[in-house]
Length: 280
Image 1 (tube, rainbow, N blue to C red):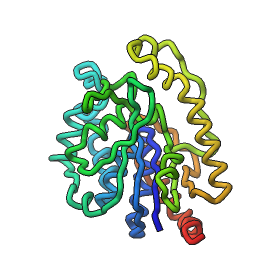
Image 2 (image 1 turned 90 degrees about the vertical axis):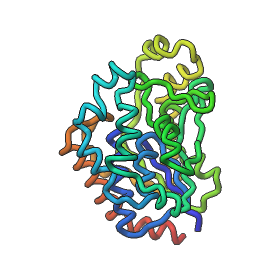
Image 3 (image 1 turned 135 degrees about the vertical axis):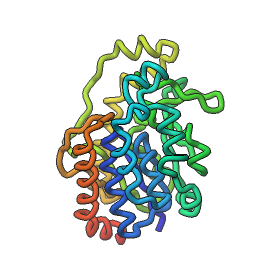
């Protein structure tokens, strides 16, 4: 059986996903491929390296550290989440990422990014997470509070802009079974946002402006598609069973722990149903 796992982003809401992934590790549940978006990619690599608790641990420890993220970093570096600390010092020195275990997992891992020049999604294969830190950083670099990330002459920002929940891409890749983890309750829908700011900040990239301004439509259409596929039994969806108010760049440790705990609980509550889906 070839199992694909789709992980939505959402900044610190992604700690819900981290809880689900750690519960999967507890059950020795294995998948063959992962397509992660933003925080889904950042936390997903720790599942592939089997480092249970790592995603929650370093966020609880460093969320309030001014070296990690904040307006000081935004003003001095152009990135709300500090590039050098969050993406280099932390995984390479302070809470070391297990690259050897990641490689041994043999999971086909993809980080979703948005090409700023085309406005379209790209799915970058991550073979070595510590070498490809810029690819992971690009996937989670939010517009308006991150600098554009340049990789091989291409310009990238947050994958959630162009394909927030890449379920159709996962199905196209040929996985027999697809598990989708979203970070919003089933009733959530995006609304139209202010269209002036993108025009001001990204005037050189009209296709990216269009991608930002139409994001809400694309996202809501994807949610409708997910519900349809779920009803048909083609995918299995795990979504928050209740609403926990938490911001993308949350620093409140109680809220962070709560949404992580909800992920643990929701995976365990849905595990029998998940096993039945896989046996169909």
